[in-house]
Image (cartoon, rainbow, N blue to C red):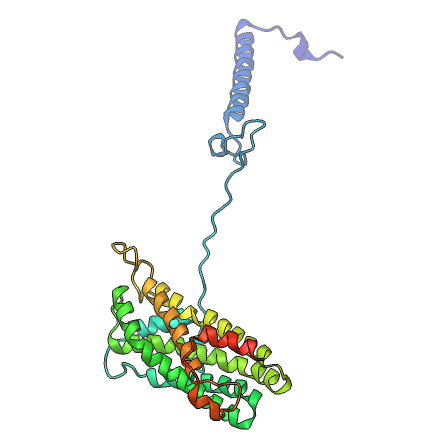
Length: 301
C-alpha cells in the first residue's frame, strides 16, 4: 500500500517553510564549525612564549643558569669551647670579637689565647728536644714557651700600627686578641704535630733529618695560621682602602704576619740549641741569622 502522505500535494507555503528550515540548519552547522576552528586549544603553548630558534649551523648555546653559592658557616653547639670555635670558623670567631660591645668583657679571651699559644709551642719544643734526651726535652719545652711569648710581645707594636694603618676600628684590647688568635692557632697546630715530631726524634739518629722535619712543620703551621689574617679581611676588621694602593686589601696584616714568622725563627735561633743539650761551648756561640744557623746544622751533621 502507498503512504497517503506521498500522494498529498504540497502547497507553496509548505515548500517555503521546508526550504527555510533546511537553510537555518546549514547556517547553524557552518557557524559551529568555524567557531570550533577559531577557538585555541588550552593545552597549546602560545607562540610568543617559545624561545626563538637558533640559526642553522650556529655554535652558540644558551648560557647555563647562574647558581648562587653561599658559604655555609658551621653551626656551633653549646659544648663548643674556645678551641673549637677558633678552628671551625675563624671568620665567625673574629666577627663576634668585632661586634662584641665594649665593657668589662673586653680582652677576656686574651689570657686563654695566650695560654693556648704557650702550651702548644711548649709541646712541640718538648717533642723536638726529645732528640737529645730528657734534659734537652725539658729545655725544649721551656724554650718553646719563651718563643711564643717573646714573638707575640715583640711583634705587638707592629700589629697595632699596621692594623690602624689598614683601617681597623678595633680598640687596643681587641687588636691584642686578634694577634693572640693568630699565635693560638699556631699553638694548636704545633700541638697536633708534636706526636709526629716526637716519634722521629726518639727513633732517628740523623740531626739533619730532624731539622728538616721541624722546619717543614713550622711551614705547615704558618700556612694554616695565615687563615686568621684572611679571616680578619673577610669579616671586615680590616677595611679596604681605595685611596692607598700600598695598604689596600689588608696588606698591613700580611706584613705583620711575615714579621711574626721571621721574629719567631730568629728567637728560636737565639735560644739554640733546641735539638740537643747545651754544653760548655754554647756560652761563646757567635751571632747568627736563622737561615745561616739552619744550613750550618745541616753541614755539621
